[in-house]
Image (cartoon, rainbow, N blue to C red; front, side, top):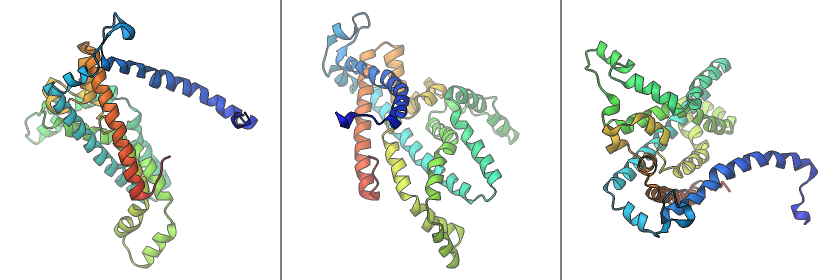
Length: 299
């Protein structure tokens, strides 16, 4: 019994944990009961207990729908592009910020580039829709150079790259926090020795800064792989249209349309469960690879 006794000094800390644990249970774990719909012919009037049990029929039906393969490919492509571009952008910006000598200027730049992260895609979606519309800012500028108006958000071939670039703009500032912290852990004497040897700033970055950030980079990429099938529901929902379904429709938006708008709850739950299982496998495998490459452990 003594092993479960909470020290008096730590009691307040455990009490502080209660509200977030309750919220996590209600909004993250309790909804998992809905997974049972993936194995039923779910009818809201009958509920979980009385809907017909169909086993894996929903999964068999799912992979016979032509759109599903394209949706999965779209999700993988967009999510992979986001992981690569956002990671590279965050590393590059962190290195550039580290080179700024003026603390006031550095903090000003950090505040400006962090700010978009705290704006929801409801707001950002409206901003980008206005900017990329036929009469928007981008077409107005292009018109000054004699370029005909381009309806950016209706071009299916452009849409995935618009998603990647706009999210990179939004999230890069916040992503630099971890990499800036990683840079501060690098031994300053390494840079002093490099200067004595005549190494330029570029060579210092290439041979000291980046190797010093290796374990952090591997860790962040590893954690990102768990979201490889999550290409950004809110962003896509705010920006896409029927014209861009071919290249922009992802698993989450497809589930939203099929599961909620068309009331095919069991089908939506089936692909949602499939995505979660694949994500779990990917993050487990990537974690094992990360341990072998960088000998870095998360738990």
